[in-house]
Image (cartoon, rainbow, N blue to C red; front, side):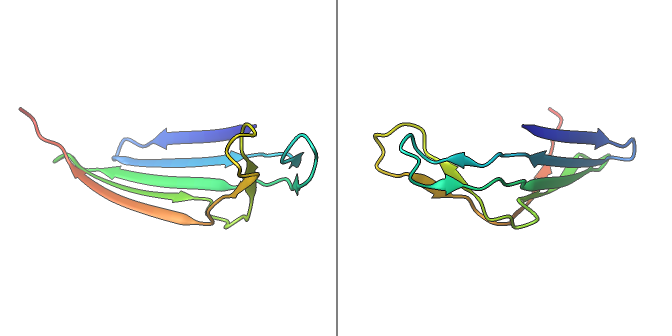
Length: 98
């Protein structure tokens, strides 16, 4: 289960927050590894200027929750994947009118 909220203000500022709720589960059918519950949180902010410059900062798993995901299927040879801790991304974009 997950939730997210987005809001864009009239002054060009936008905000985002999202959280995933992952219950604890077994990594495979044989129940060899139990993956605990986790709740990573993502956030973001954008700012768009009247001259069409757009600045965006996104943070994934900002609370640095350590969690794992089970791999789908039995053919890959991997039982589970460690998911990354906090990651930040900054981008700048300029729009043009033609």
